[in-house]
Length: 273
Image (cartoon, rainbow, N blue to C red; front, side):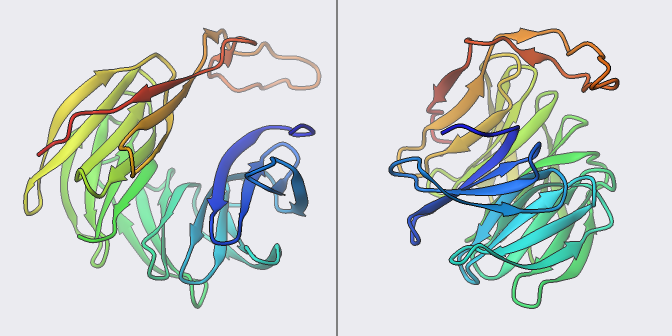
């Protein structure tokens, strides 16, 4: 596939046989065929569509926007925009509990917002203190627990029904994504310092860090295959941040990827039990 600007997120909806990409530079959500990678359509959105989550209960795709501090809601089967939900904060990763609830980390306010996917309204705001700057978010749908990876090297475990903070645990520096393996009962945080923190539940609401795996500096974006328990992390050789230019006088301060060095790291951690 080509013709993209800056891709942030990807969601595959197996029941519909389609996938979605968020192009933050072109302000589009791109619909594609996962089997052929053919582009099936483009949905114009607000500026910088970023992370996304699909809610199977309602058939809706939720897309976060940092500049407008909101989420676009798209009917996955038709590509029609249903609504825009104001969040009053910068959204990071959203997750669905499979029962019509969407949870979103709010980076600048260090909280989790719960959205009712049926009414498309914000139903709760839960502070994460002492966790600051949450990014990655994962959910244990069976035990109703949320795992928020925060920028001050903590992961918060939160009750998905009440919003109560259950505990915090140490993770690596510069986290981005989080994941949860329902069979292995393990939570993960992929961190920019080149580590993958693995957390296990030892008893009811008793969690501990069982591994800090060495990966690669900058390997902070991941996905999890719950069938094989494999974790896939994207990585590349890192260069200096982009220099200011007339076209982009204030470029991002994070390192740039060196062309031709992209690769995928595959990790299968030992089960925590």
